[in-house]
Amino acid sequence: MTMKGWMSALVVGSGLALAACNPLENQPVGNASVPQPAKAVELSRYLGRWYEQARYEAGFQKGCEAVTADYSRKADDAVAVVNSCRQGSVTGSLRTAEATARVVDGSNGAKLKVVFFWPIEGDYWVLDRAPDYSWSIVGEPSGRYLWILTRSQEVSPRQYAALAGRAKALGYNTDMLRRTQQ
Image (tube, rainbow, N blue to C red):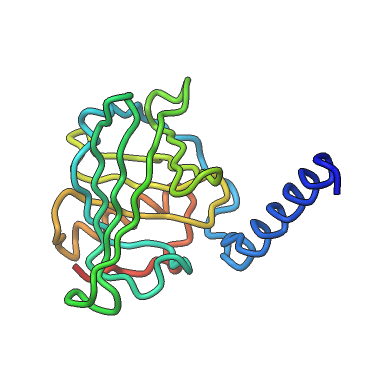
């Protein structure tokens, strides 16, 4: 086979592999009209630990409890991402996934591109956040994923209801939210 033939086979094979493992195919849409992020995000204030309070369930997070996301600045101005969860229960075995994120130019810091393994990248949009960065609502353009994050590990039922209400105001179907056990 010629070099051109090998390259064509590689590109087609890679495309088929990616299509076969595309998590969006079976993921229901919870918001058919995702809004653009409305508030600028100061990355230095967003860095640190976040606790997941609720999410749209996705295959890659199946069975995850005690979910955290840690963001820190890398030397090249990228963001190091470490997502962690406990499998099956808050005391289950620890699973982690590391990634690198970059702020999308012109997004006021509210949109990032995240790469867990090259060349696959995903969108991370901070759709809403508290003025003091104590909570954020994160989604992406397809409306299939949604996360409610807080700086506090535990939130009161009243605080959770207020955050779910904000997600609903952004057009999300809050009946699809799955509470995360912390």
